[in-house]
Length: 282
Image (cartoon, rainbow, N blue to C red):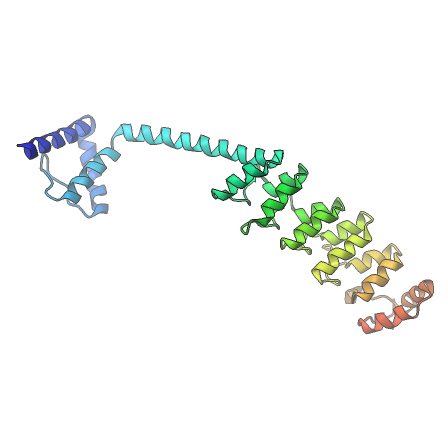
């Protein structure tokens, strides 16, 4: 008697769910039951298998209008919660709240995500929250080479002549030879153009690419130093093995002028050892 009463109650629930749209429900069931490998039951037929009964009830519930309304409410609630959590994550970075930041990172928040289109490491740097920036970069999944408006954080630090941040980025695996946007300027060139030759050399030493191009016109840092007649910088670059591109080889006259002006014959020998064509016609 108890089992029979349960069966009647079960069928009553199904009839209640199917009543408003019985025909359309039956049509959609044919498609959905096929996905579950079940045979569509006939009208008022009790499904003998437990799997069949559960499948029938699940599909009936999924196709009920109340389910779509409830799922929409849940979706928007979760979406609002995610946005609010994202704001809190960003606020923790802006405020330098390392404790709150640790909490978000421990529960799995991505340090590479963006807030309003800007990577979080840029937000931390612009707000001068260096402890927070260091904490983000310590995350194994954090990418120090993220770009914003065509530049990396390395470019921004080099332009600002921020030596401490450059060293932090270097230890975090940032690329010291990254090229900026359309002009392809490297961090070393930006530091040099800002008047900080020592910082430019430090970046060059980190990249070990003293003769690499620093702009889209295939100039090296040596070309910029030569054009500015910055002979101390030229000498330091040559000592590091700098060689100009073949199409920009200096003439014998220019090399001799450099040696005379510096009053050091040693630089001439260094240039020859570095592979300079000192006999080219300029």
